[in-house]
Amino acid sequence: MWGQKHVRTVMVILAAVIGYIWYQFLPASVSDEVVFVTVPRGAALSSTARQLMEAGIIRSETALKLYMRLKGLSGSVKPGTHRFYRRLPVAGISAELVRSTQDRSVITVPEGFTIAQIQNRYNRLKEKTGTRFAYLTLNVPVGSVAFIPSDSMEGYLFPDTYPIADSDEMGLIRQMTANFERKVILNYREEIAAAGEKYFHEPDFYEALYKIVTVASLIEREARVPSERPLIASVIYNRLQKGMRLQIDATVSYVPGESTSNKKKTTLRDTKKKTGYNTYRIDGLPAGPICNPGLECIRAAFEPARTDYLYYVAQKDGSHVFTRTFAEHKKEKARSK
Image (tube, rainbow, N blue to C red; front, top):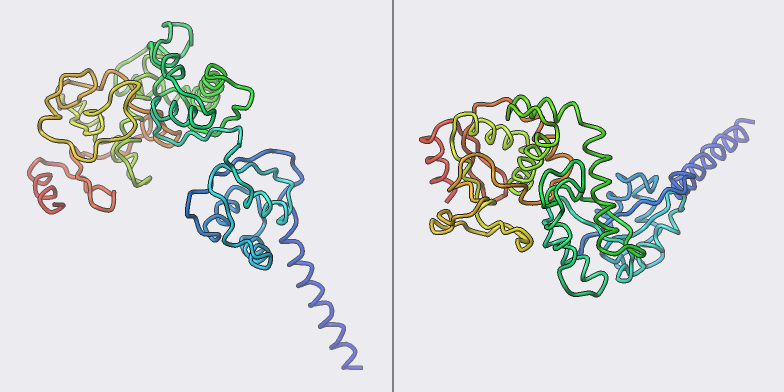
């Protein structure tokens, strides 16, 4: 009798284990929602599985890794932007991961991309040449987009993934600015207006937004460690309040429609260039945003940390040391060399 009970118990446990394992291979959702995930070149299967888990596309990292290893596909994941339906089971997810993304009709714009970088990526995907995207976004009739008080859209092209199969440059621009309005203005209008009043004494919402986005673009280009974004924002506002020039290296090399990255090393000669963006030569903010910041940098711009920091020094690992006095700043600068 005891033996039969024991067998039944084992069978129940075994069935539960099998059921649990089987469950991990099922779709994470019954939704038809499409999710785009960009797999970096050279990414390991484990990091890709983690990405998909964080995006809510799979139930279990282990299940995906096990399935792909059993199928001999663990080394076949293709880099690029993949399109997933949330209702796909692990087998479908696996099939998508090993499919080439070369011909995909979507563009992924990372946080911090400039107009020039978006132009280059769009042209590559569409197998085009020319600068129509840059021309359209740098020659905007003032007032044609209600929330952009400038002739440039730099800063307002929201980083995200967009379908471009049936879109020309103007179609992509409309998607990006509409996304900006939806994710930034509609969600954070009050916070942005309050920050504009507090830090710039700016009563006009769209002018306040322009300044906040400009600050966010500086943060995006300076911060490499996410937790430092509000700290860098605090340095910017503290210096502005004291009438100190910002002296941000990322502004030195920025040229609208041309810049694709920060210059690796800023020289004394660079800091003397006369441009409306060079914050070594001008007081206050640069003439406008120097890239298209992501939402977290925009949030940092209207919700900075409360500090009395006035300086920061970049470290070799991309982090920064923040200081309050010029003497401390010089010490940290000497240490970082």
